[in-house]
Amino acid sequence: MSTVALPQDPAWPRTGGWPAIDVDADEHADADLAIVGIPTSATSLSPTRAHETPAAIRAALRRYSGHVVAPGAPGSRGGEAQFVLDEALRIVDAGDVAQPDTEAGERAAAARVTQIAARARLVVALGGDNALTVPAALGVAGTALPAAGLITLDAHHDLRDGRSNGSPVRRLIEAGLDPRRIVQIGIADFANSRAYRERARAFGITVIHRDELVDRPLTDIAAEALDIAGAGGGPIHVDLDVDVCDRSVAPACPASIPGGLQAHELRRITRVLAADPRVRGFDIAEVDASADAADARTIRLAALLVLEAAAGLAQRLGH
Image 1 (cartoon, rainbow, N blue to C red):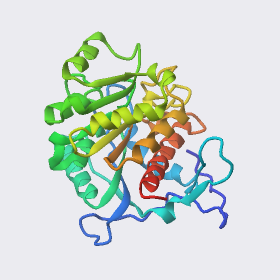
Image 2 (cartoon, helix red, strand yellow):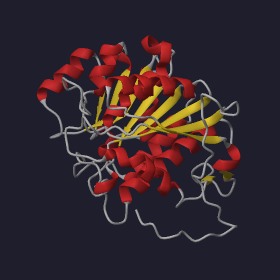
Image 3 (spheres, rainbow, N blue to C red):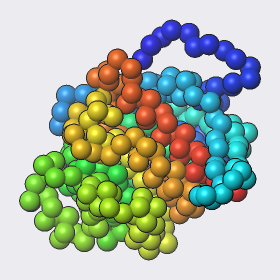
């Protein structure tokens, strides 16, 4: 990410400079949306410096404005709605949790997310490799874990044995998440194995293959996922594993492959999911800021996912 100073224009205010809060001490910590860094990397199956990514995402956010235009109905003329995120929402930054790769650090991270979720309508956790999904989802669910749901946008099942960025879904099931309320969107050929596909089937996980996203509207897929994940009446957490995207879109994701989602697809479904009140949390995973292309395209996409989640929340609240 370039360190060149960005131009300043009072008529084009930048977003992302959100106030830091201490959820332990700040009586003004209540918010519509809170971001928190969970910089996991130590258990990754691929060499990564994904722990550097939360800071990189925060820096990339400053490249964008918070202005959102919601067009009218297809075929209509005019009637567009617009709003500015920083006017429509109170957005705060809860900082980074420490040492989330250790067992104690993971428990502390989950507790911190629970604490933040009690004071915010939506929590967005910045990773980190996919190991962050465990404390993020556990934190969003809190004591409602048996009723909670999980939606993953991911090329992989993440059902491996052991403790790594390849095991968060299995670990969440073992922690008490009902696998019948897990939906995996974007699972790709040549990125998994028969054993893990059969494991997903045995658990009762709903799998929506990458090819289905070519033939079905994203809004229909999102609606199906929300109905399944929300069937227990508990909060839904969404894991945005950016390696679900095409490798040309996400070169900073070690496991991204040619043929994945396009950036506009992941952005669109993020906003649609965030607009649903059952969704209480997102995590953004598997981006290694140190491995990005020279134009920082993956980090910039991750920053835009934060803004899409905020835009969906603003629409949820009637803006």
